[in-house]
Structure formats: structure tokens, C-alpha cells
Length: 367
Ligand SMILES: NC(=O)c1ccc[n+]([C@@H]2O[C@H](COP(=O)([O-])OP(=O)(O)OC[C@H]3O[C@@H](n4cnc5c(N)ncnc54)[C@H](O)[C@@H]3O)[C@@H](O)[C@H]2O)c1
Image (cartoon, rainbow, N blue to C red; front, side, top):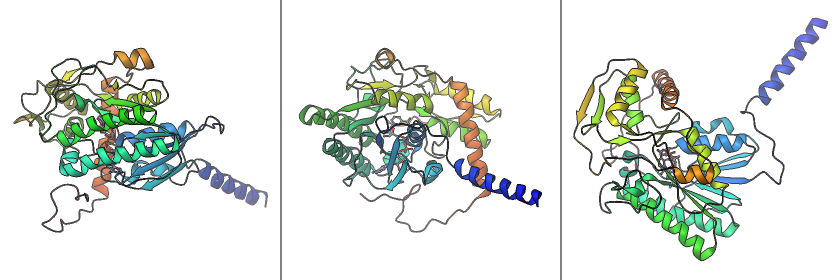
């Protein structure tokens, strides 16, 4: 009987502890310190890492996403938590909720995704941003816009600092995103000056890490997937164009400290360590440890030749700078992609393409 009771106690203990361990550990914050935070695009790559940080810091987080490029799986570990809410909503439509802070990230971010439906990209960045600024004004919330280094276009100034106005082709294939973000910044400052809305603008440079999309066409995910699958690594142009990549946890720390600072002018967040695309290809190939060869393809239109952030402002005013070494970040990302490939191989259900109306790639979003 004693043994029987012990077994029952053990089962109860395991049952209760499995419930209490269901979620990642969350700090307790008093009512005064706990904020109600909205993250638009929170089921995407950056947004889901930001959700993790703010949840673990003890805040109440509402994620709003239309799942165009985001997915529930990125935030499913919070579903059911009392501090978390997930709303399937398109920011092009108005939203009425009560919040203290808004991280406005909703927008397709990689070239194939934002070029897929340029009108929708423009609507998301213009009407979507107006809607979020309107919400910020109504409820007195502070809004942080996830802007981009693409506002500098193909820069003539190097490295790019926040004073540089940019060199963007307004009618090129990338314009729906670049100009969309530029006007989103303009809207933020119009709301700040005219309506007194508190705004923060982060100009984000290339970022990588787990939960990036498998086929988003960005250079890091392309190279890692190609190397893991033993395919040639495709380099567009000569490979001498440069990029600088930051690991996602560095970006998330930068976003949170910018939001909680008193800096309302734009701030660059990126890693200033610059490499040529060819160097990246070689580094990734050696970290994955295979012998894929490098294949050169014609240069993409309006592809910036050099990109490197000047982060002196973030360093001086936020005390922020990237701390994750490139190789460490790449190794974590390689592990993530190889798990994803395994997951795909084990759960492979490939639906047949339906109608001829659909373009190749992601299903068309409604305008
Ligand atoms: N990742 C980078 O390297 C990078 C660089 C510069 C700027 N940014 C900016 O950071 C933000 C997040 O980028 P990411 O890399 O996480 O991209 P992502 O595509 O993974 O995330 C964007 C999210 O926004 C959602 N979304 C898109 N349109 C929406 C709409 N109309 N309504 C509601 N949700 C919508 C998507 O479903 C997705 O979950 C974007 O605004 C992007 O422009 C990212």
C-alpha cells in the first residue's frame, strides 16, 4: 500500500510539474512595471524572437499577424499562457485594442516575398502603418517602426549613417518595399509632430538566425540550405558586393533598448563587420563541412553593392552593439536549418499545385 501511495504521489507530481514546465520561464513583474505590448508581424522571424524576449521579461504580449510569411509554429510555445494572445489580423484593416507599446514589424521582408505582390507590400507599409499610428494616437501608446537599411537604397555613402538620405530607385523592382518603408518613416514623424505620438524608428540591417524562412531567397538561408543539401552555392554577380549580418538576439536587444530609450530619431541596428558575398559562401561551406562548389549567376537588378551600418549612434545613445560572433550565430542557424530539413523529410506532404491562376511560390495575398 505504501508503495502504491508513493507511486500515486509520483504520478501527481509529474503531472503538475509537466504543466508548470509547459512554458519557458517568465519573470514576475508588478502591475506597475508590466506593459501591454502589441507586436505586429509577431509570428515572423524577428517578431517571434522579440515575443520570446518580452514574454520572458514578464510583459503581456499580443501578437497580430496575417500569416503571410509568419507561422503559428514560431509562437506556439506561448499559446494558452495568460500573458499571451495571438490575433489573426491584417494590419491594412484598423485594429482596436488597449496597449502601452507597439512594435510595428508587419511587412514581408525578403525580396521574393515583398516583390510577390508589390501592391500588398505598399498597402501593408502605408495603410498598415497609418492604422498602427492611429491606434498609438488613440490609446497613447509608443510605437516603434521596424524600418530597414533599404531606405538607403544603393548607397553612395559608406558606411551608412542615419544622416544619409539614401539613393533609391523609386520605380525599380524593390521600390514597393524601400519606398514603402521610407514613407512609413515619414508617417511616424508626421504623427509625432502633428499629434504628439511617441515614435521610435529602427533602421534594421541584414539579420539572420533560427526561424528564418527556408526559401526566402536571402543570402544566408540560401547558402546554408544549398550547403546542407550538397547543392552548388549560387552567387549573383561577381560576389565582391558586401553585406554585414547581425544575429537575431542582438537585434532583439537593440529593439527593446531603443523602444525604452528617449531617442525619437532613426537609429541603425546592425553588425558593422563587413564581408563579401564570396567570403560568406566560403565560410558557410566550411562550417557545414561539405564541398559544394560556388556557381556564379547574373547580377540581380538594383542589388546594392555595399552595405555596412555606422552604429556609432546606437553605441553612444543606447550603449548597444552586437555581441554574438558571426561563426557562433551561423553555427546555431545551420543547426536550425538541418533540423528543419529533417522535419520536412519526416512530415512531407506536398500538395499538388491547384490552378493556373496561382503564381509560383506563396499563395497570392488579397490586395
Ligand atoms: N530580417 C531582416 O534582415 C530585416 C532587415 C531589415 C528590416 N526588417 C524588418 O523587420 C520586420 C520583420 O522582418 P522579418 O525578417 O521577421 O520578416 P518576416 O517575413 O519573417 O516577418 C514579417 C511578419 O509580418 C507578417 N505580415 C506581413 N504582412 C502583414 C499584414 N498585412 N498584416 C499582418 N501581418 C503581416 C508576416 O506574416 C510575418 O509574420 C519587417 O518589417 C522587416 O521589414 C527585417
